Image (tube, rainbow, N blue to C red; front, side, top):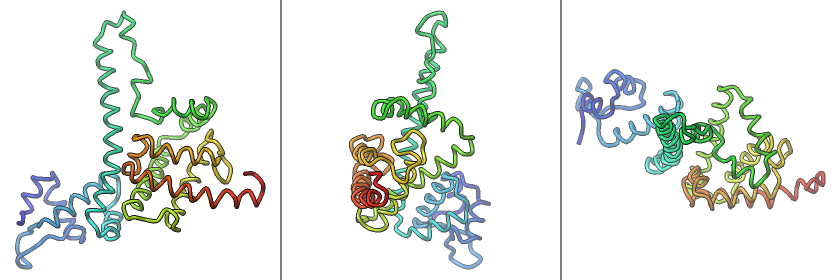
Length: 267
């Protein structure tokens, strides 16, 4: 079955002009019965267009989108990776919706009653990083949360966005490797584990911050928590992906920490 460019435009909301441009640059080639015939799109083109739109929503330019599509030939696997990001975003949006609903409900109450007071923490759930304040404080102390919170609030909006982008890229690379069936002990998985450790020590207040490696117990505790807590597991595609991350971090800990101890006796 094939669809006309007008039908695709109606289905997706993408303008005919944009579709023609995608065709012209080779991003979304159309099917034609003759060289001069009208543009038609088959099922393969529709799947490719879905991937293009998902990547565009992530902020990628057309050149970067083309590179991703060329690198990820297995469409089903690529879309499973997209699901990881979409589900994480779905959870964040769900918290935002609940937060706004609570604010609306409070605003509609009698402002003179105690019940009408809007709790700031509830208002901004899903909008920033404070959703894990309780866990951080309970596990590693108030000082750890205070330092990391002050660091985060000291970043500019652009720096915060760039930081989120790096974290999202790391989570995506973990999920990709898990879906591909990568061996946790492989060089590829261990390179990801090293990036993960580097990310952890870059955050002030975390155990081992500013050191070559995070505290071993902290790293392994997080690894276990990724599997045990569905909120964290969702960042890696679910329990299976989180298990891969945990196993890779355990291998990393076995290899990295003895080497550090031999070098300077710090561990």
